[in-house]
Amino acid sequence: MDLNLAVLIDGDNIPSTYIKEMMEEIAKYGNPTIKRIYGDWTKPDLTKWKKILLENAITPIQQYGYTKGKNATDSAMIIDAMDILYSEKVNGFCLVSSDSDFTRLATRLREAGMKVFGIGEKKTPNPFIVACDKFIYLEILKYEAESINTKTISTNSVDKITTKEIKLISHTISDVADDDGWAFLGDVGSLLQKKQPNFDSRNYGFQKLTPLIQAIKSFEIEQREATKGRSKLIYVRNKKTRKK
Image 1: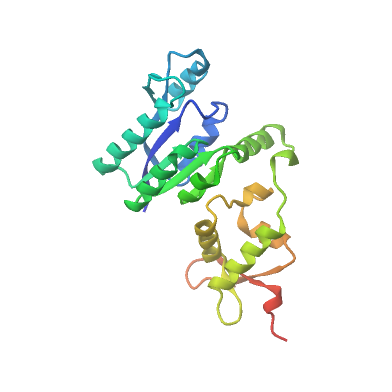
Image 2: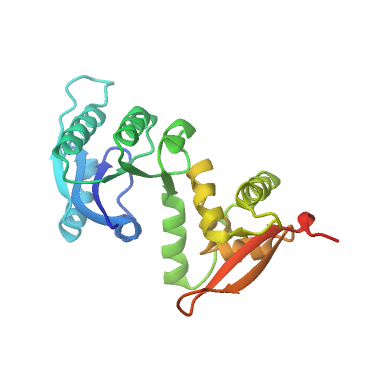
């Protein structure tokens, strides 16, 4: 089922540079039927957003900072999110912010049965990340856009996969494997996302999970014919489980 998504953007907290790439990313997960951005539009530092909003049909929501040191934008987003939730017009939310203040909101929306996607910078606190079903880093979208434009790869934007991630993948394979140790890669990917919402093969320089698995010597991959259709099914297992 294609999700109808409410996209709520913290304009005070998110750079405008890669909004086009961000909206293209969101479209992979559902139909953004509601698109709003919150901020004090009387401030000059939000001027750069104005043209971008028209190009992407995003509705600006004016929120004055009534009290110095308090983020009124956060409160406005949270109130709107709850109004949208009760309107029953969407079945998913995309919260665009690097602010941990939205942790409780993400948790509440998921408690109500909503699918919640988060988008923010790598500085985003972990509590907000794990409160989402999936969390995407803006730096990865920036990296992809720059790679396409320059046809070069900048390794500065890509993390190296560590022993921690390899163990996570290994344990996840074991969790869904059959008696011979083989696990359907689709199931592995789904469980990885549940265990670690910010797990994304693009964080490590791979567009998909399959080439990431292939690049790690700890795993082996097998292609199997599907019972229906022409596509092949990908299975993976830990090499250590191989029977002698």
